[in-house]
Image 1 (tube, one colour):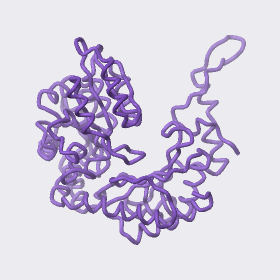
Image 2: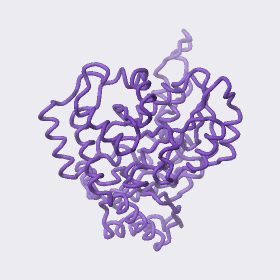
Image 3: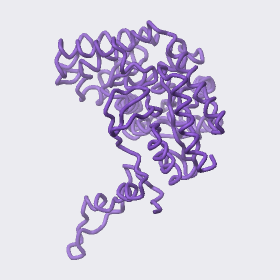
Image 4: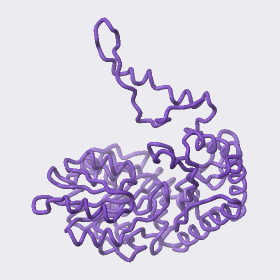
Length: 418
């Protein structure tokens, strides 16, 4: 069974159709009625979404009743099962209850929130941190707040969806440049009328699908040349690269040159929420003007406490990011030795190109059935004919698990001559 090119993209909308020919009324729900691609994928046996996890998020999990090696998680440091992190969440639940029932602006600020912001700012060597309820919400709240009606926001084309949604929510003009293409970034900067407008360059630090690292030195140099500001989304870089896991700016030695760090608590920090690290003046402005910060309930006590415990765990174990990169390189080599072509990288994201959409879905399903969970990237998350299987490592993966997973993945790819 062939599937539509826009396969499974949850935002796909069929054209609106008339509810009846007689009254010529458009039915808002007609797009829902016409959306059948998920049903078609299930019928074809290649539906690969919403698999139910029945155990803790770990290197080995129980998913739909079967043991699977987890190679598709962003739990980079493996701290979701760390005893000290779990204990902190339990104690917070007992002390503060299950939720804050209000925004940070009003009744929803706990001393835990303030302590987390203080310690995270110190760790990142920035003056202040502002926290948000999710990582996605952080990008929405930062960009839409700072980029005004006459301003410009300039994006790498492979930036995360939350960055693009933040740009759309702002009143500014968005310009995009080809992935890591510094010549095109400069062309975008040359279009900005700096006499009347400000500009914010936003880039992922580590790109979530390909695992490559932004060319931050040249981005910073161009920003200085033209008078723009720089924001780095470190969702996949925090806890992964840089001194002690401090992220992309630290990795390049540019901590004093990047204006804003954004990050999430749902990956290396094993919790839920997000943050912005910046100067005191920028943080103060966002804290009092960001709708996403003002009008959302604050991070729950348990989530805040587990995040703080995970941060302290990372500070006490600065070897964890190094262990993560070591085991990632081991897995990359294990795949290569079995004939699998992978992209070179210095991060725990190991992409395997599978090219065609239908082929990618079939491969992901067969790998899952073989006992390994991986993610697949298909349009619109990937360009047509550039689909890939995304694997990602945790610092807690063992060499034995890497070998087992590599053998199972390679066995499936041999069927497709990949």
